[in-house]
Length: 398
Image (cartoon, rainbow, N blue to C red; front, top):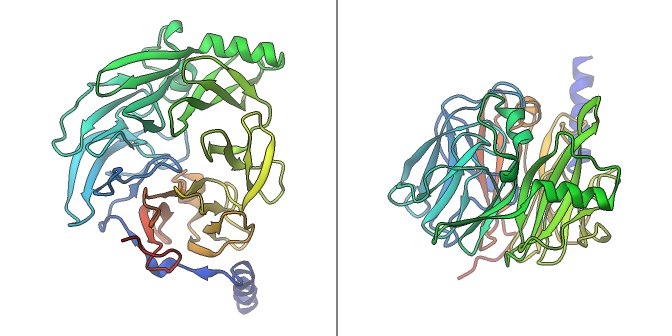
């Protein structure tokens, strides 16, 4: 009986990976040590723009449990890629989910959450000096032209930290912070977002309204964001909606069709996982949610290379695949079948139950793919990187 079980497991694994190159021999951890390590949110490059430095989180202890688990002491580390020399930049409080969401502002400045989703700070990556002091708010997905976009949302903070001082109602909304000048201003208040959405769709309500996933496009002219509200007054589960606004606060609207884990494809279109597709494939959409084209096959979280030729995404969808494996797939743009399996593991608890999500992201030169993998047989996860040139996926740039 045991033999039959093993036989069928092998058959399932072989069938799922048939014709797909396993690339794990070209994958290395970003840090060698007993501690768990993590990166930022999906499609956020952990390298400085010039590729010289790498940021990652090292955990004193990981959080046992999912989103409800309390933040734990962790360390923002900076590694010199050429020498491997690693140093502590600052101590933070984070969960397994998205680490401290560190985002590079330029080659020398980096921002990260300090007190989980409540506040963030900007540091000089070389000296460790703070250049901003603590700023209350939750960082978005990236910085553009030395400018950070972030959100302030009481309902978002109360979910994680009900004991903390709330924002004034007028403070809630989407903000930007120009790091080099210190100028900070509100792009649009939450009250205007709720009003505009309700005018466009009366079924949208403001109860339990949260703002998060603020994501500017590459020019900083347009912003995508998540808006979540209670389904009903008596139903505290939240419905997730996609929002759009111009960077000057105009053009605010609800996007009728929301793919999962939305990111920008280019300056005028977005991409994400189609929740209506039973296979959960990746598509490109216009900014009204109209589906434009297939980009890649099945995925959950996703990242895309700067030249838009390669897309990475893991599966299953918030659980392991039927054979017990979570796999990170690498796709060529436009192809539903993967070119390769970047890595695979069976430690479902760490990736899905304890929310150390895979969060793939490419380096600025497109030669490296970063992600988070669970370590089989241990309560541990680690940041790792695939060398796409060594794997002969792409040709090394001179």
